[in-house]
Structure formats: C-alpha cells, structure tokens
Length: 611
Image (cartoon, rainbow, N blue to C red; front, side):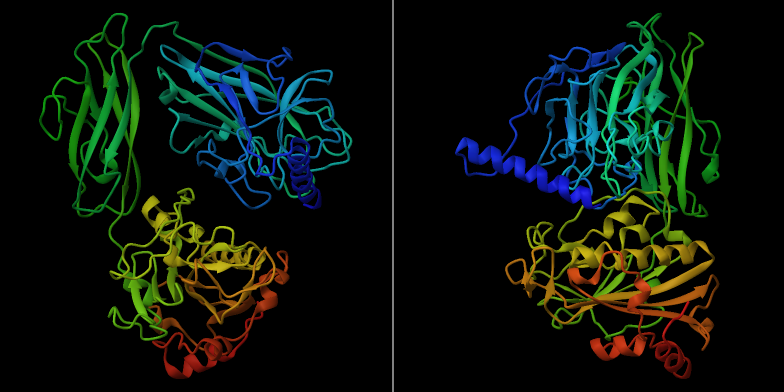
C-alpha cells in the first residue's frame, strides 16, 4: 500500500516536471492516438516489433490494441478485477502508455508500460494509486468466424523486492459500448512470482462464447487492479487469437427479453434474432424456447409472422409475448432457445428473464418508524420516502436522510454486479433540491451509502436503487472504506449463517474531515450537510416469521457510532466503535425498534454487543 502511494506521487511528479519544463501551467492531459480498426482472426501480437510504440500515449502503430489507466473504475485496493465490468475508455488519465522503458524493476509510475529495452519486449500492467484498474482492449472482427479461442501469456517481468497478489481478469463485450462480461476461465488469481523474481509465466487460453461469433466487433479486455502492497509489472505477451470459418456464416441467434424483469402476471416480449447460415443459405428457419422453468411449455414456438408479439414478419426476429404465471416464484431464469433450418443445422441461444414480484416497502419498517416520519411534504425536515428496497426519513434542508431503514435476508442477495449509476432522486417533492451525482466531487468525501450496494444484488433495479443520491451522505473515505464497509460485509456474513437483519443507519451532527483536510460543514454549495458522525443500529434474528414477536431480551443488537473523519483509521476494526442503541438514540433523538414490546426494547437497547 505504501508503495502505491509512492507511485501516485511519482506520477504526479512526472506530470509536474513535464509542465515546468514545457512552460505550460495547465493540468496535463495526454494526447492519445490509436489504431482501433477491428482486426480479423487469426490475430497475433508478440511485441517483438519495438517500433509499434515510440511515444508516450500513442497507440497508433499498434493494430487494434489500446491501453487505459482505468483510474475511475474503482477507488479501493485489492479489488477483484472480475467484479469491474464498467466501460473504462473514458478514464481521465487514459488511454495511455509509458513508452520505451527498460526498467520494470525500478519504474514506479503505474498504468500501462511498453518495455522494449528488456530481453523479451512486451507491454505490461501495474496497478497504482493513480492507475486503479489498468487494462488493455483488443478490437476484433469476428465476422464469419466461429470457435474463437484467446490465448496469451502473463509474464512477471518485475525482479524488484515487490511482492503483491496480482490478479488478472479476461472480459469481453459485443460492440464498443456498455458493460463487459467476465470470463471466469480467464481469471488468474496471482500472476506475480514474488519478490526478486521475474520468471513466472502464466499461460491463459479461453474459448469465447458463441455470442462472440459472427460479430463485426468484439472487444476483449485484460485487466488488473491496484493491489494491496507493492504492485509488480506483469507483461501481456504472445497474444494469439484463432478461430474457424473463413467467411462462412453459421446459423446462430441472440436472445432477449423486453422488459427483462417482470412480476407474476406481467408480460415480457421474448425475441431471438437469427443470423441465417450462408453456405448453403438457410431456409425454413424455426425457433422454439423452453419455458418450463416458469411452468409453461418446454417447446414453445417463436413467431416471425407478425403474430404473438412479433413486429415485422420475415425479418428473422422470432418473437413470443409471454405472460408469467401468477404462481411463478422470484428469481433469474434462463430460457434455452433452439434454432433449426431446413438444411438440418441447429444452434442454441438463451433468453434471460428476472421474475420479481413487487416488494412492499413496509418490510423495512417492521421494527418501527424511528421519527414518526410522514409523506406530507409540509414536513420537509422529516419526510418519509419509501422505496421497495429501503425506507428513509429525508431532511430536505440537510440534503441527507435522518435515517434509512432496510431488511436484509437471502432474498436480497444475488450475483447482480454493482451498477454505479449515481443519480438524483426524482421522487422527491416538486421544488426540492435534488442532490446531483457530482455534487460531492472535489470535496474530499465519498458518496457514502446508507443501504449498501452489496445488500441489494438480487436484481439490477434493486442494486440500481441504492445509487440514488438520497441514499448517500458525505463520508470520509477512511470511514466509508474502512470500518463502515467492514461492518456492511459482516452483516452479509450473518445472513449467510442463517440470520435476517433489520438495519437502520444515518449521520449525526455537522462537520466532518475528508481527504482534503480541515473540517467541512457542507458540500454542494450548501445543499448537503456533512455529518460529524455516522451511526448504525441492527437487530439480528434467526430466519423465521412474525419477526417483531421473535425479539426477546436475549436478541442480539449491534450499535456503532463512528467519527466521520480521516483519523478513524481505515484498518480499525468496526467493533472498536460499538456502543448501545440507547446511546445512538440520545445522540439522534430517534426512537428505534418502537414496535418491540417495551420491556424487551429497554433491555436490548441498553446492552452493548460483545460478540
């Protein structure tokens, strides 16, 4: 970690030196060139031609490949690169490359480096405090190509004393927009060989999914992240991408559900867009889809004749308007679609549909309304704002909640990736200031979640809802990324152990200290108050029914109060901040767990957790 900070400092020093020597006193922005023409398959690149990259930040001589620093894709260290799926092509310090290097053992500026002065030239990646998720993107034209295989070697070329766990992920997307999809078979947990070694070679060989076949543009991304400890330079070398086809288009298709998330009794249009084979041309194309996982036909025909939801007859888009049965349970479904033609060829694709019955916001208020908040906008200091994913009391004039309450059990946990779609909340009453996604920018404070993203991963809408700015407070990075996040993870661990939790969180007081130093009272031009403390209270119950009646005097409660400043210590255990629920009530003026029997409430709120 210490050297990561050094790398950031060294990078900034390099920038500063460049500015001074050039007589330019504006912020350095790389002028980057790249040859992004999608390359046909087979495709190879072993970097033995050292004239491909001759100038910093110029990829123009490298066919189809470009590198990025990825400095806004994450802000933490030790992040699993498989979890970073967002587009990184607009990261402010990238795309870029350090050109003509010969010093992987001593070069401290992280990112993407071209090392042409070593025995086996290559490009390499190194995470740092500036390059949080460095990566390279390979642009491929897979038209007429099937059975695509991607192979390359990850080579540790750093013989310094650095010793990091350096994971690498392989991802892909169709086209040049949207999130990437991770390829688990391409994951390397640690591509570094350890201190004073530069000999480890880790071969990677992965077959791309059929969805990549016959596509005019497939983008591959090889990505690492800023490690905990001292990052090492790892080369991406001997790239060899092969396939079969040679221009013959094979029968294929792509499935989709619109909308992709519906509740029981609702409709979704299922479509399969078919690419006919070319040699000989497909005739008599038919598509059937297995809907047995929602209790319907395992061989449901799809239509391309203008009926059953089909829009345009004869356009090779086969459709079926499905009504999800009322008895269908919540969960993700993958419907297998089989495509056939009269030439006895077949192909398969899948259609993803999430069945999700609407959740009742009262689920999050089972234990009570801590401030008797109301939906009357004439009470802007205590406005009840219910959502399916959580409920809050919002304070218009503070620009943050008084409290946010949510229920957490296994039904809220899934594999939906973090959406990171921070945005204003249009559900606030008309005329109220809506805090914007960039209102905390440059303040030195994180956009700190009350209900965390990790507690709402059962569906994209559920996770996305946690990124409304009404669910945020200005949080010191050491608080948010340290003991606060550790407690969030611990709560999810309790759920995996057979418990369900009722959690209430908020901020108290005014005046916190972020990464810029000094006490800050407000951000967003005064629209948002910076709390002096963050707090959280939790009831832990074994999974069951009639939850209020199952709260006894022995029921575990957890309460914490954490200072909202950088002195908290990012590695300080959350347990160091435990207190009683009574103490949080005294500080906030709130009444937690008011639906619990008074005698039991008094006992559990007075106790301090020791587990």
